[in-house]
Length: 188
Image 1 (cartoon, helix red, strand yellow):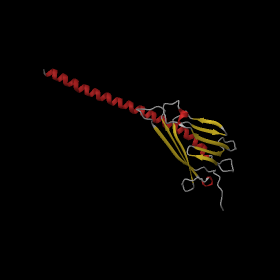
Image 2 (spheres, rainbow, N blue to C red):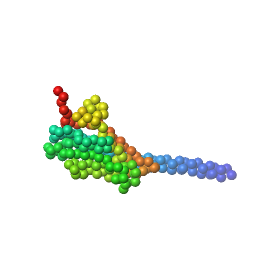
Image 3 (tube, helix red, strand yellow):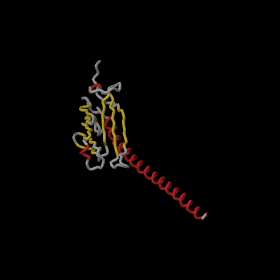
Image 4 (tube, one colour):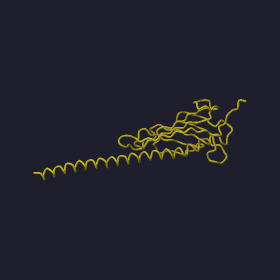
């Protein structure tokens, strides 16, 4: 009787230990998958922002006319020598609506477009859920007067294309850029 009780106790304790070990291993696997999705979203954001940041730093280079032509919450058109050929290019960044990225499982993602001189040079495969541009004056306050713009606040949000545990992993990048070549009218 005593050996049966010891054996039963050992099986119960061993089972509890085994269940705890399996739960721990499952948590490690879940954590690994979540971090992989997060890393992918961050890498995607970084690759987009590298191109965008290079372009925005060149706003106004190679032109004497106003550098920023059209702005909207998800749209900006500007002039700048982004090709490095000494000639100002017309560059437009715009964000599609969510129906344009219907091939991905994420219902929130959109496509970020980059057009240079009318030719599409960037057409993201999805994952971008927000792209916003805010024009700022020299004090950092929002402005709609193009000749008062001295800074640009950029924000891009990327979500994973596939959900993990019912949620999409998000990466957000924000930066304030001060293009050195913005054309300004001198009131002196």
